[in-house]
Image (spheres, rainbow, N blue to C red):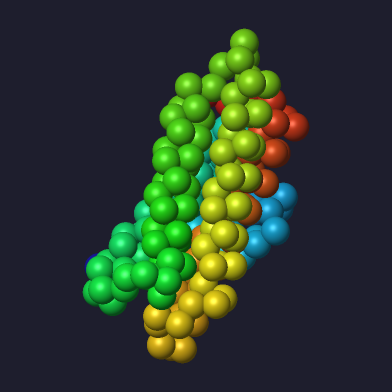
Length: 198
């Protein structure tokens, strides 16, 4: 390969890399801007970065992404709680905390499913009512998670290590839910603007 060809190939490679970097930078800006309203920004940026190219500047798409990742996280913990309860064969008073957690996390999954369904069919006519439902359900999810955490404080059916691990997992879901609620509140403030679509 001649020197001129090598130089042209190298120049083309540099251009491609620069274009890629620019696109990545833009996507990074989108997620950082969306997450600026959340309390747990690092978690928000890390968990929602894959949605950047789809959501861009759309508050409704960011809210939907926030609820989607929260639902995935809450479902995982709900399944873990159910499995833990079965494996411990807990009955009577010792099993109350775990049983309560299983129940409230089941409720949380339902509330997040309802939220996601509403976010998929937002419209200007019912927007205020839809936002009201979303904030009610997401606040209820936070209450469910807090109820589980409170109940776990006094439980003695788990080892200290198991209890700490479970508390951390439940606590982590509250961070996701808090971020999702913040994104819905941002949507409530901005409304269905020009950047929003179905």
